[in-house]
Each structure stands twice: as structure tokens, then as C-alpha cells.
Image 1 (tube, rainbow, N blue to C red):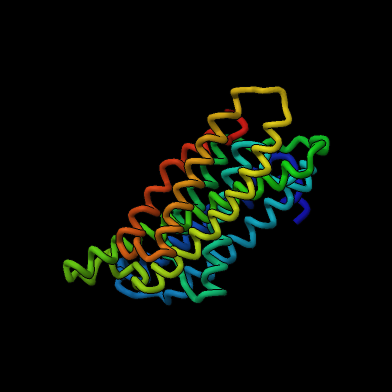
Image 2: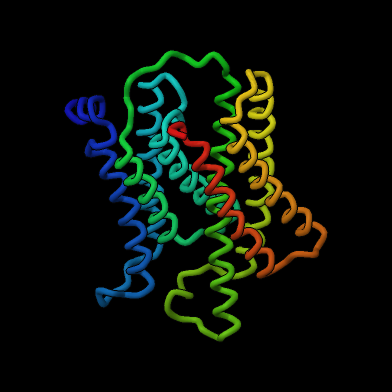
Length: 276
């Protein structure tokens, strides 16, 4: 245990614990595939993938807490930390939906997405040097709300893609293959609306704080693209939500519109990376 702690202290992203965390999420995705397609001639219990991902999420939470305590700030200050936090948020949203609404997002999709975030962060490299405390505590709220919003949008995109695939399968009367991996249409549709509402609230909060901070500084054009991209993402989500509440957008049209949010959200997130 002491040697592992020393390894994490010197090389936290390349340490055994981070590697184990990424492998756990990949294993959870592989287990979910195996429980549905029986590639080895037998079918393992499907609940096993959920428990593996849950354990991986707990380990990821502990490692992020270690990183934040070493850096004396929330683990959102670098591009690698943002990717790790995004992966953590995707896992958190999946667990929240499972435990609160009994709606389980595909374990293979969550496992692959979080593992991709972990390995991409490993490629970027993680800074472990302590920093001085920031002078504006509300900036932490701004960044944290934005990160959570993009996590929710990521879950919304996965949910919408699953809905469109399942809707296409039912229209063509296809019930096997990849379509057996997807949840039913009704819970997908209901959860999609709830995720969209959460994204509007979180991203709106982040925009208000970010715009206020930008306005009180010396005018600089460097922050305009990031704010503009985030505003487009928020407006897109809000329009879809309003049309959804009014009943003019439902079913596959709602899922397709929500899936399109991925484009401005990806641009806004990329512009928000500290390296930009």
C-alpha cells in the first residue's frame, strides 16, 4: 500500500491505479458485450458489467480526490484533468439514473466512453505540482457547472443515439444483434427530457458567472469564442426543451435534435480547455 501511494505521488497518471481504473471500464464494456452475444459460448450475468463500472467509478473518484488534494484545487485546471472529470461525470450520471430512475444506460457505451477519457488524459499527461489557491472562488463554480453540464450533454447524446437506433430497429422489425443492447424507447424518451433540463440549468449557471467575470476584466477577444460557443449550445438546448414542453417535438425528432447538440457542445468544450 505504501509503495502504491508513493507511485501515485510521483507519477499519478501512469501509476498502476490509473491503469487499473481504465482497464476496469474496458472490462465492464467487454462484460456487457459478452452477456448479450455469448462470444465464448456461455453468458455471464449481465449485472456483472454494472458492478465492475461502479467499482471503477469509485476508484476514479478516489484518484481524482487525490489529485485535487495534491494540487489544492478542483481537478479541472488542465486539459487532462478536465477529461478525467468528464469521464467521472459520465459515470456519475449513469449511476444516478440507474439508482434514482432505474434507467440503465448501456454499460458498454459508458465503459468505452470513460476509458477513452482516461487514456486520452494519460496521453496528455497530468500535472501534479501544487498551485496557490485561486483568487476568485466563483470561477470554480463556473468551471464546475460547465463540466457537469457537458457530462450531462454527453449522457444525453448517448441516450438520443440509443433511442434513434432502437426506433429504427422497431420500424424495421429487427430485434437481435446490436439492437438487443439498447433499452426500451419509453424510458429513453423520458430520461432524455430530464437530462436536457439539467443541461440547460447547469450550462446557464456557468454562462452567467463566466459572462460576469469576462465583463469586469479588460476587454479581451480571447474569451469571446468560448462564450459564443457555450451560448449557442445553451440556446440550442433551450429551444429543444421549450418545443418539447409545448408538445411540438417528440419521439425521434426530439432525439435527433438532442443528438445535434453534440456538435456545438464539442466545440465549446474544446475552446474551454486551458491549453486554448
